[in-house]
Length: 366
Image (cartoon, rainbow, N blue to C red; front, side, top):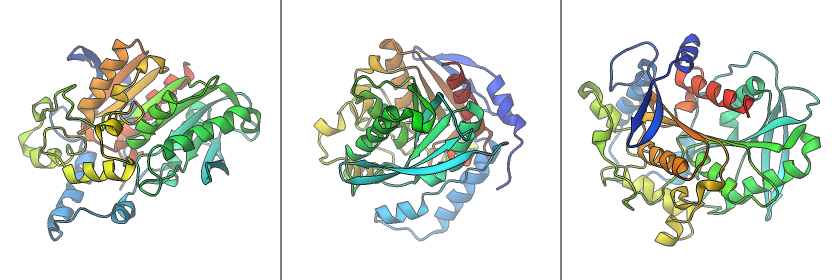
């Protein structure tokens, strides 16, 4: 896939369209080069239509894909957009008998007192790998002048909740207590993650031991409610503006987190089964499993990056309302024309770079 015109990312960043939705202020970033509403960005359309058509041609199967099949097909297509060389190293952290690989990227050979950013990859808690987000982390490191840690946390179902959270806490403990070795200021630690990684970033922050603190959360379309039938908010397809010409394609991207019984219930059930020790309301509503049930007032400054055509968008916007209600310095930014996992296409979708540019500006202003 060809790289997009990077000026489009600047156009998105510099545009603003503040709206109020159900009492929540959202900055909606429009598709930068077309005016039509309710459609995919042309670049997203090319990607999703090709995938959709390929699946339609495949033989129908009744069985849910296995964990290994999903892991095999979980890929990202992020591109290297760095202008300068970034130092890359690797170390391990031992957490409860598990050896966790951590890759880190620094903008200088001997950094000192830099902002630290821990990036936690997505993948439904049981798929994905840190290496897929190398270019995302390198981009953040250069543009934010920060040291970025990219953690290969333990995946479910081999390591169920709370193993991944424990791994992230172990990494924070390591860099906090040895901050000089990594060239960071131990009082400037931020967390960022996409999808399941966004969930883990919140969960890690909720479980931080004193005196460790986090000064920022950059959350890309996180899963924040594992029990979306709790009636805390309404999930309705009518809340998505969908052009009839693309309805079938767009609705195929709304299944994740869909709470009206019409989504991919088998996949959601698989995620719950893999990640949680028990499929009970007690586990589904734990604050560090479903942060909509947490005391969010302890969270630091937070930015939620959502996608117009993402089934998780409605729970994320509800979460944004909870953040406001509980006094958290937060904002919600919705990128039109894209769907879940748009960050995976850094350099191809202008919304991916634009979202990172906004987060990087947040980090610089801390």
